[in-house]
Every structure is written in structure tokens, then in C-alpha cells.
Length: 389
Image 1: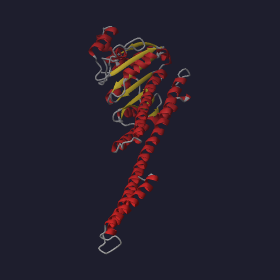
Image 2 (image 1 turned 90 degrees about the horizontal axis):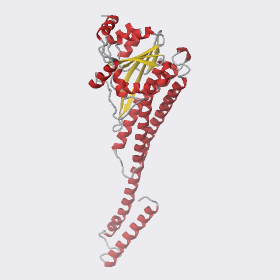
Image 3 (image 1 turned 90 degrees about the vertical axis):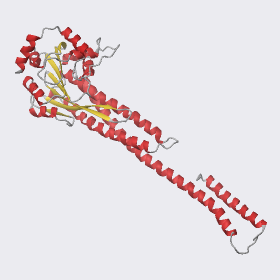
């Protein structure tokens, strides 16, 4: 069955009101594992963000994976949660229409439907399915392909969790492909709804919201790493030796910084390429907003580099402190060994089995005691004055 036939079948069977669909979606918590969590007592742009995200879920779709759809016309939201097969209908209905499609963990068969509806390059489709892509922006004849990573940091362990996502960018459509649940589409929809006055800028506005959410996640992760490194610094000069725990924590943070650097650093080139005028992606009205995202990328990149140097310095300082403490311990042991050697030498001298002044006399024993106390006390005072013990 073609996408057009499925679309006609959907229209012949679908007679429910959009508001009824929204209520049904909200009550049954549909979404195939997608996180449409209501936030009690909170609203975003005058509406519950979870309810708004649920309305974007589509029930009828030729794709087997969960899908979300939205359509704008001259900056006004006109449809959401419609079947994927109607994407081309919305685009053909009016030249001012812009659509968004989100797919969760699709396969090649699912993206083949998009190739029929929108027209995507086979290489871009292959990159969208395969995992572990480098963050990049590829340029094709009719569209752009974006690969990026959303990150989340576990504050207890300091480990970074990456969520890989891809996006197809055309003149009038933004198609996002999420390979797991790490990136929250509900937050993206709420971000768009909070700046609905900018929706008139079309795909440039939609892409800005996507990039802004990704980069904000990078920035927050780096900030949490900074706080964790400050705690490690406080433990470094603590009165009690933190032992192997400090060193293990430092290596965990360093590993997290290396991982986050791999996803943050390429975003600088991605934003720089998007802002080129020959791509015609960023219009004049959205230029300052993209520049703000670019500034955040630069700050996150520089922050990551400085934290890497700081963690390296902490490890080197830790080794230096350990060496200094070892030297102090060896010096103290040497000083006490010298003090203890004095009584040993005196008693050894007086223990000779030959006659000497005071041999087998009481005053000879007192003389040996006085010598031991005076010499050992003199050594102790000398070492104490030099702060060796």
C-alpha cells in the first residue's frame, strides 16, 4: 500500500475531533515508550507541556516506530498528531506551511517512507540508522543532514550518558530521528511553544529550538562536572588522606570530560557551517538566536578544555602531595632513629667487658644515664627547631 492510499484510508476512517484525540492520548498515555510526563501544577506557555506533547503523537502512520507530527502555516500551529502520510499534503496545500516529524528508533523501512514523502538521500538515511556517528552536518542537493548527541551526567558517579539523534533539514520540513529515549521531545515542544512568535521563521525556528536544547544539555553537564571537580579539589588538601577514592574519582571525571569533549567540540563546526549565508538556513531574524547558541557552544568547549587541564593538574598535585608526605615521614623516621641510636651507643660503650672509669661503680651508671639524656635531648631539640619532627 502506498503512502497516498494509506492517507486516503486514514481520512475515510478518521472522524474524531482533534480535541477528542488529544484527550484520548492524554488519558491513555500513548507513545510507545516516549516520555510524555505531565508536570502537576506547572504550565508552559499557558498549557501543560505533557498534554501538548501528547497531541503531537500520531496514531496512524505507515512507519512502525512511534512518530510525532506538527504543522505550522505562516507561524500558526494548524495541525498536530496527523498521520505521517499527510506530510506531503500539508506541504503541498500552502507554500507557507512547515512540518515537523519525529521518529523514535526507526529502521530502514521506516525511513523509506520518508524518502517517498519528502525525498532523502540514501547516504543520509543510512547515517540516520547506523549508530556512533560523529557530530556533523552533511550537505546534500535538497536537504541537510545533522548528527548530534544530547548528554546527561550522573552526579553520583560522574558518568556521561550520550543520546544519539539525527535530523533531516529541508526548506520546509524538520525531521528528527531519535535512537533512544535520552532526548526528550516534550521539552523541545515546550521550547517551541514558549517562543511561538518566532514560528513565522519556519524551519530556521524549529532547528534553533533543537540545537538550543542540545547545547543547553552540554552546558549543564559541563557545569555539573565543574562542581564535582571543585569537590575533588577540596578533598585534595583535606587533613585526612582521601586515599584511592580521590584518585578514582579524578579518573572518572577525566573520562567523562573526554567523552563530553567528543560531542561538544564538533558542534562548533556544525553551528559555524549552519550560519553560512550560502546555505540559506538561518534568516536575518534568527541570526542573533543562532549566534547565542554558537556562543554557548564556544563557552562549553573552552570550559571543557580548562576542566581537562584542571583534572590533570589535580592528578599531578595528588602525586606531588603523596611524594612530599612520604619525604616527611622518612625524615621523621630518620630523626627518631638517630635519637634512638644515642642510648644504644652509650649502653654499648658501657657494656664493654673491660675496666674503664666508673667500671662497676654507681657513679659510672649515673654518668651513662646523663649522657644518654643530654645527647638524645639535644638531637630532639635540634630536629624540632628545624621542623623535621
